[in-house]
Image 1 (tube, rainbow, N blue to C red):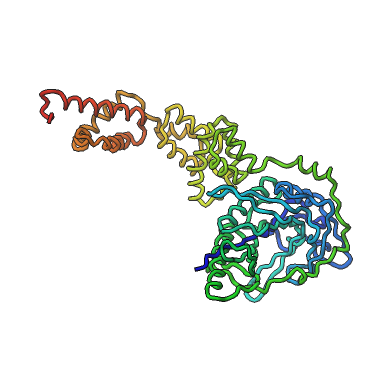
Image 2: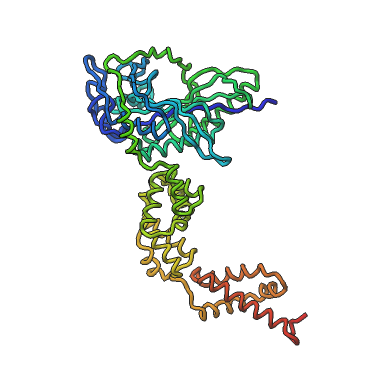
Length: 494
């Protein structure tokens, strides 16, 4: 039986966070909030007699992305007209780049369980976004506020071989764009959209079979699900002796299936030709180096620094830098005096757990009520022995739910750790006296029962007892009982 493998490439459309549109002065606005068709002008509406002017800031943002993706920056850029007809395309064509893009021949390294892998970047080019359609029954409403917003289209090589690799690539690329500050990464608002080109072939073959394109995936979860489904669908077609049609597909999130939209266009269908209203864009090497100097610390470099400077594992560092907001939160905690490994553990284990439960995305970590400073205070309470780790987790949840100062919560709720040895020794004795059956089991050689007895002491103290002191006292009293049993003349001696 033939084993098949997928061949996957991604096209990513990222809206650039400029103040004005790609070819006019209209303000870039949040189309989910702004009143429809209120930020438009004759240029972005494509009215006759208007002339576009290239947004310099958008070009710089595109260069930043290209450099971050290890691309070459083309000295000569040309814009072209991509002709197709759709209701949300006001001019009847889109100003884009085709034969001479801004950036090309780059790569992005992704981390996988089996190691790292390099994914090629074919090109990154500038273009303008379309309008936004809202479908109401048999009618469609058009909002042109988005028309003309600068877009950067990033096209990968078909180097990915699984949904997991495509997901890792998408997450890494999204993180880079957010680190650069050129895209918000908010896929719910459509500012970052994925399109997948996918085919399957016999494993080990270098054959390039017919592929399909899945359009406008607006979440990484949808991306992974759509790829997994399409791999299964195409594999099934070949196993039954059929052929895969070249077509554009949509993703039905509710049903979990891809659905045909139209036959796939060839490049010549768009009738590309140079944009006559824009001269070639010449980018000097000096300009490229000026932009390179503005690049921030990117995820891989930050991960490596967290490993070398803070002694974190590569895995923990990678989790922390996956979202810039999380990395900033972590560094704020370190700046407030936190222990790096303790802070990383609190964030990755406890904070992420509560954020997931509350439905808060990781890039919104700055909205949680546990501030970095509060987290440092909490850990200091543990380090000083004021509270134990179990109590600290309860305090952490309290701060997460309602905010406040950890020290004040500990005082108000009487949660300070019990460390008085005489008091704890009394409680340990009471527990042993009350559970003679388990004590007998210990004395007969079942020493693992001491953990259960330890739990009973912690329960009596409502988790406030210092576990190290309890463990020491429990061992002392149990060993004393064992010696007493072993004494000559003891009635319990065998």
